View (spheres, rainbow, N blue to C red):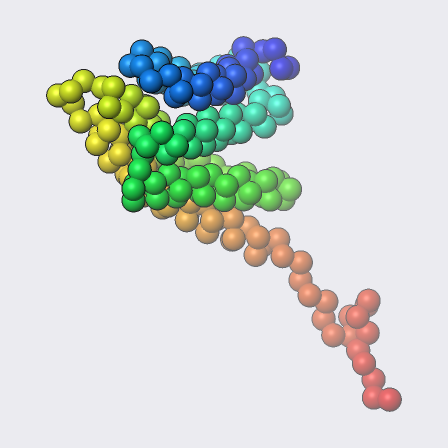
Length: 203
């Protein structure tokens, strides 16, 4: 049911994206802190929607569909804005590229395996990756508007690199698991002379 609380929390993550994006265009400290607060609140709902759906037995097909999409849209939009406004620049942009490419890879893999009725479980390393990634992005949103005595941008950049490394490792693990299932479900080639593939006889 779309109007259940877990699904509404998921939808709120999508609804907050244009607000977070718009706040980047306001060159004021309050805008950066507000964007960070909204981003953090959206990240918290990512945990609550799944927990409440299971606890209240309100898991739904649309919820399972929207949840990963909301996460990826929020992260992708924010990373793009961080690069656009130079809060993430230079070689550190590669960390964002790794994260975005992994999201595309895992999404495609999950979609393919869903057709085989095979689920891809989330590992603890992937959960740590997500946590570090969200915290790092929060620091980068604040950026130079943070306290002078705290290297906010540096902390965010280092955190994003840690997340990128974990992203690569977990992405590779998912890819290996996916390839294993793909090979297991690969249809066998008909043998020579089998029905539907008659053996050729000398003419």
